[in-house]
Image 1: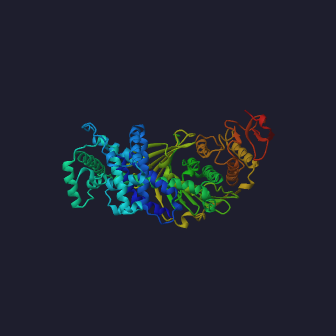
Image 2 (image 1 turned 120 degrees about the vertical axis):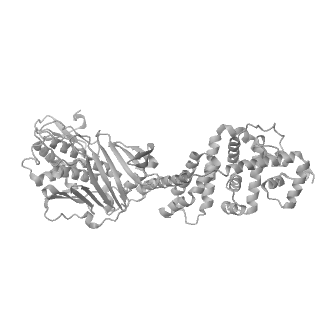
Image 3 (image 1 turned 180 degrees about the vertical axis):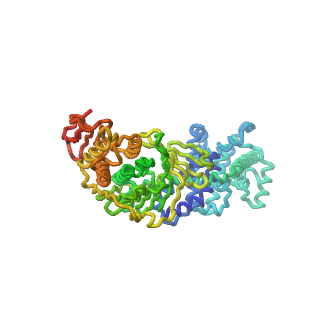
Length: 182
Length: 441
């Protein structure tokens, strides 16, 4: 594939890649890094592509992967305690009783929205990739289920399953930070 | 609906708004009587609200463009590496800019042009930086730019030259007052012509049997210049230069520091500054870059203008020997007032030095006595080519401030490829073979 095509690819999808990375990481510099890494990764393999690539899907998934990798690194030790909790939930299945964990003390009113977002990203980084992708596409990128199915290469019901599992797990992981009253 | 009949899956669907209106009403009715489920839905809602807030981060147009541009530049840099490996069959027409010999041919030609009268007695000159920046030069089909050299020597004026390259293997260097050098890569080497307007003469030169080094793609060089930001050592940020806001990047090399200024809006190279480790006070500024301007064949013509008389120089690189170098040393010592040898021999700085020496009256005239205007350039040229052929670390020059005569003062020693002994040239220009342990300290 020609160099010109690569330029077109960057110009056409650069905004979306940067946008997704920014929304996930909420840090312009880190998002910028993701953008560079994603496209340079594509460029390194450029002459190996056969011209039949679903670029929006490929780029979206590469972007989420990179962004969550960074989020994981950034959270480091901070997220480890929560991780144990999450895996124990996975081990025992997602029964409503498990999700209905004992009510935490009144949610910390001083908890900043920003902190909650950080916790959410950290929790996303620990989700199975498909679930994280579905959640980000649906809730952060505001895509319709049909479009998400195309991007993830699966059926719409499967998208919904991924999304529901993601929401449930995130709610469990973050339960102590989430307001319990509707 | 009793609490036990509601699954968490349903609560999630409810929070996501995926349920039919009937199902929604059922869940709402259930929530009114079940506090745990109400709290669960509250948490789900709060999670989705958080995601909602994250979805509306504004995006800055400029950031997108800047990120796209940067990744394209970086991709081009990576491309250089790939091309350098895979494009083994470098077109002969492209050999001129990167081959060590070709560089030396250029250096020698510049030195030659200066020495032969290009600028020696007209107060114009330098070009010393030319060979050094050959590495920085280009790849687009054509490239034009201006090169301004500040010599750092007070008596020597700032020199401005217009350079033009075409990827057919042509180079043209012109000064405002009509000194023009055109180089053309041929299947066997390099040929060229230098015009010397004051004397209405021209120097035709040719170098044959130049072996190509396919390890590098020479025409990648300007690309490299353009893509320097991706590998810059220092990012200088934005600064206003000549009324334009430019983004600066600095790369420190072994013998020069290159500063590149790029227009952040267009990504175009605007200005490049070179400073040389070995020549303090000297700097070169490249500006007015023009890429892919169509350049006619006549622009690179090797035909002299009407009325010009020739000074012919030719050298077969395979036949240049030690004797040619000794002839250069002899010529130079005949040329200088105090019979001294050249201060340096392995550097294109020789041109700058020659100009300066001429200005200081250190030469007996425009040509060394008994050599004349025709032989002198040839000897110079072949002599410099000889040094250019030697590998780094296999020779040493010690002739600075040494005058012709003393048979015990070594001024140059070198080792030929495959030889266990070294050759030493003494100040009376006799030569001896010695083993490495007998070399001068």
